[in-house]
Length: 519
Image (cartoon, rainbow, N blue to C red; front, side, top):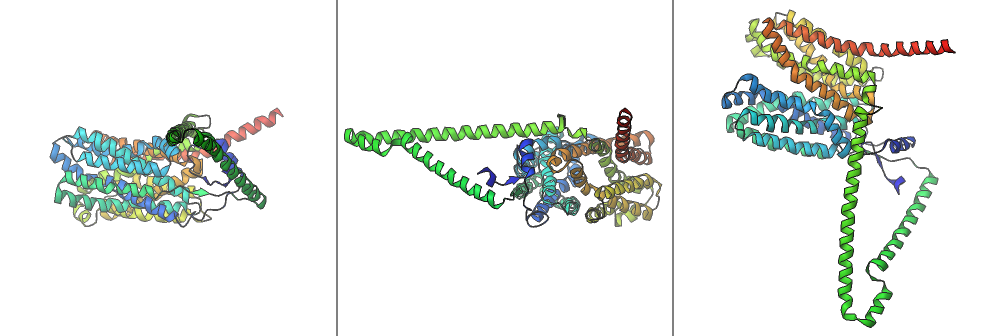
């Protein structure tokens, strides 16, 4: 019977030994790979980015309302938005544990409910500290529980068009930033910020629908004619066993017909009572056995899921034993803040250079956001080309971005700033390639745990980067040094990725030379 079962790439709580045995057998190509239901997964992931990441990009609207309502400092109030954005990414490694145990679908549905509850409870906030818990922590964790499965499932369903699929799904962030800003502004004007957050909480329940669309993908093992004959014989034998066990259960658990006939001769009045007692007792026993079986299965699933998660981070075959992946995590610590800093400082730079009139017509931050959408799709198409490596495209985009960050303070005209901002928006489209590169480094089975670490590093960068840039401005009274220092730190991360492969080659060559000398 087990050989007829489908095996899932998302098979929760599976032992490595079992997976290796299954991997030895050939799997039939699934019709939904790179097509069919795979595009529904892209659509689901797109909506997740619109609702989750788009609403986080639009939190400036609510931040102004909180400043008026609670009359707290800007720094303290800004921590509400920073917390929810940072926690969404920082909890990535722990969300990997949920995915290993429960699967992407259940994790995403739970996250959608938690995110909606966070928004709704925040509408009753009496102070900023209340928002730290309800919105910063609760909604932030819920967002993380939806965001990571949305990325992982796209990787599950695509092989040839992975970069394009990830690019299309992550464009939801750009569209969401525009739509959610307009939507929240309208709600705040019509109903006030409290009712606006309550309504947005109801909208976030649609994340549960997105999670329901994330059905796990199954593969069927290829079987020969001999194996099919064996399987049919096994099914016949199993059916005979089931019929025999049913007869035994009837004879032992209730009453066999012979006993019934004997009992009729003795006490016909007590027969119905005896039958009802036996049936009730049997029903209770079956019910208890079902509960025990469910609890035992759940316990085993949790243990195996935790074991897989623990082995990925702390075991002998930990992800961090992969030096390229470790360098990738180091790079991620500086990546996200470098992208966020232009959004923070550009409005002030425009005022400083007296370019407000031109910027009001077409804001520089809008140029970054719009070109960023096209950058994700175009870089995805280029990466999926047969003669092009996704890693090379990823590194080229990173180098372009760091050059733009370093030369941006040198631009003093609107045209110059607009060109650099367009290049920043296009090159930052490499964010859609991050899951693809991560999967190439660690494999699809470890994607959830590995990408959880990557977005955790991005979350730390997003949480600490902007305050660090503000601190540099307070010391120097110039925005230029914020770009220079963050750009140089970003360049260190890029160099770690470039140098790492050559370090490994030098070590292996040295080891071979020693072995040859010994021989």
